[in-house]
Image (cartoon, rainbow, N blue to C red; front, side, top):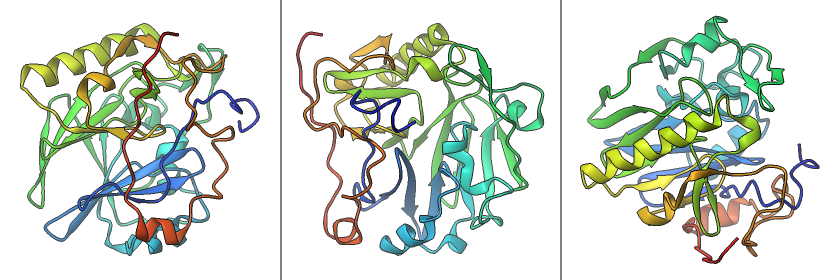
Length: 281
């Protein structure tokens, strides 16, 4: 994977640290998992890889894995559920998972996850945690934290995004941020790219209609509070085959290089938003 995507500016993960007083982030290779804290309760958004340094990096943020009782899953790809798979370290074995009822069909084996334009089917994922199955539009109250669950199919059939306290939108693999704005996520990894674009447009319309302007936080390319930037290319898909245009000078050549992800930086620096670079492709 590191070689396939090298130099293409596809993956631009945040390093481990804090976006603000509510949201913390752990970097796992090219992916980010997030933690939202309020009223003394911390929700985990996605569960990353089966990552050997997860406990270490949680320590940089002073988060005890045993304190995590609620995990919101956007979708079941192994870079989003790895830490709760049965062959993981089971740091979160006592946590309840919240996952869309359609997405759960992957976990039951009713459907198989397809990638590479449908040419390959991935092995099924096994998880033993207690699960709560979610419907589109469902609103949860978890210890006084409002969580709205919004279905955005395309990357996977049952992909969910989570609007938390109307202020933070955790989008998983719905949006890919390029230097000139947000696109539908990577073409090679979608079950249905056309559906993914329709879902992204519908999500934008829904948020605009209610006047919502949350911080928009992605699983692989950082965050922004610029709403127009986030949906600038909602009718286009990130193309995994080529180097991205316009060129992003801040994009790592190798997204898997974690050398700049350190405890000193995690404790001492806030994680800035995506810097827009506007230009023609």
